[in-house]
Image 1 (spheres, rainbow, N blue to C red):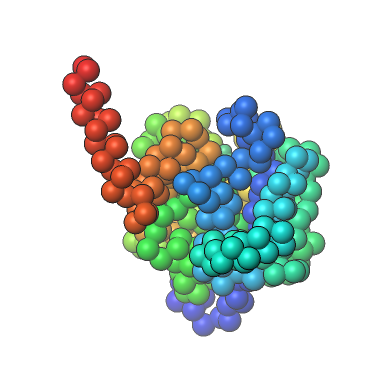
Image 2 (image 1 turned 135 degrees about the vertical axis):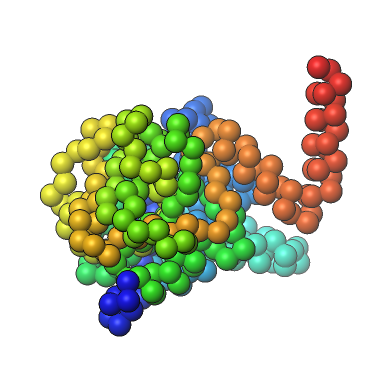
Length: 304
Ligand code: G1P
């Protein structure tokens, strides 16, 4: 790693948000609403990912979308009628909340993935907008509550490592089959150097229990790898496989054990857990909601 510290590391200003998935786990809601618009308390999932990217210094936001996602595009646009109604009514606090959702013209770009061919393929769809720069990838399903936003932690780690860095978290061995899993070359604490990666390993073949969570900082070389990649796990083009090719070069791929609580909002249970946790962390809801939860648990216990 020491050799890497001397080389100039290019700033990461572009991020890719793969949002083309059909969200079948949330049907029937996702019949007409993109999954990324489902709300945790009062903010859509995608807003959490955008805020995290902004905090990490991202200036260009690239959404890989598909048919039926126009509500997402509208969400980031100005809403002149709503804004002028609120202004006339003197509702400044609400206006401020709305303003946080506006994106500058030209800061946001949409590319379409016209066939669902996997996460790697979705990221590859953004290749022309990424060009020859390092870039971040954020999977909005993975919501991470942290004092310092996860991607910001990773940008700081990347300033030391360069190369490629993926967010990582220990999971129970029985759960590794749901993730990309790291083959660790050297464990240095919060940073590990990686010599291989396996997407959704079969039980008993997992190289470790250190799983990839949906935050990545990648070199543009990964796009070139994706160009030539054959389908992997599940018959899909896997981002993990394109990064694994980079891991063949020692000291080129790192895992980063972030500080924070990750919620798998791609699953109903994870989404509900995040909803409860975020509601309890809100000063305007905390008291009422925790009283309700306590009463509910007490009632359930009494009924048993
Ligand atoms: C994707 C990635 C996987 C990663 C996971 C994290 O899988 O392919 O490597 O571990 O996100 O959430 P998915 O959840 O889309 O199946």
